[in-house]
Image (spheres, rainbow, N blue to C red):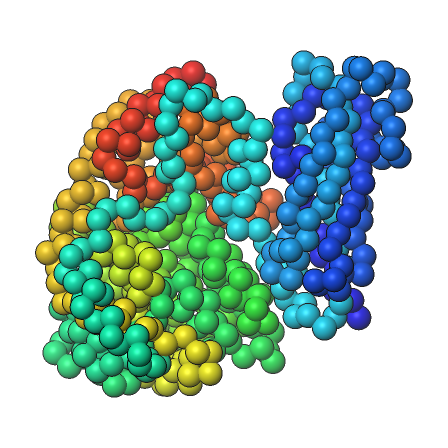
Length: 508
């Protein structure tokens, strides 16, 4: 049986065109690479219905009154990522400006994993399409606040081992990691989260990973029993890896809202019992991406008790935990487990990274720690997955986890930027400092995609629409009327961006 998916794509990469009179849509595709058996335009999404015509100008419009655009749109994810839809679009150059989208239906052979068709475009693909056709002022340098990629200098304490241990590239790495790294991680966890000495067994409860992104995805593949009607719970808005991990593990995502009305905190009590009964895995993100909200110890303990009652696994994404303010450290899941009388960390697993903490996003280094039985199964999975951390990176990671001086300096730099940016923005909008992390989750009084597109078009500043980080549930998208601003650029760029955003908001 063939697999069919429907993808909404932009007309001419979302170029802003005049009011369409007729559309000439010619479609081509790349059969050899994927074995695609069918592709077609099934629906025109616009303010009015238009009829596709053959290779001529739209009826009633002379050739010299039309512009013709040849466009191409890469569509789909995974299986369909190499497809390109080509089209030719005639339109009249009228004053009225309208964005038009087209919906394509793709049928693929059943030899591929059908769950690939469930993967949605990544937020930054949607953002690129949104910005297409804009003409930002050339006298203003572009400032990107959209991607959460740390830009502070990588610490010398980690760079030095990278330079000095290059000879280790001759050695295959251990999936489990060298003992020195696991010891450094165990010590860091105990010191940072005030765990008792010996609370973390470096032999059975710690696994180094190549950044939390790959680990968060791989984890679901190891722990979900796809023979059941499995649910994987995740916050909404959320880090899109959670959803992809659930789909590829054969599970169904269930989104629990973290909304403005609830101070961006989850309401675990509002989740129905039948959902908990089907839950096999829940992702929590604390501090949250994009909201910056931190779960209290009481909420984490409540979740631990539910996991023991309904027997599901908690995956706590804590990769922003070291970017906090005023000395207020976010509580971790393992800390809550110990403090609530569960020193074996039953059903509890945490994910940490050096990307944000130590400004080492390109090194891809982090760890997973917690319940020894779950770690045993995850290590078995990773042995076959083939994702051991390179030995050179392990040496640099040891040095990074053993040093706190560079982490304190990192926090100081973010504190400085937040103080300055919020002083500029607060008079004109509801910008607030997050509990932790480096994002401002800005509430907007106009549509978030309109805000982001117009800001880029007028001020050459890129932010990420909140609706791209969320899913619509019961007719509501909790990311609507929000944009995510990552204060990762240098101080002067953040200040410049804040002034431009302020000027833009004052025109709304």
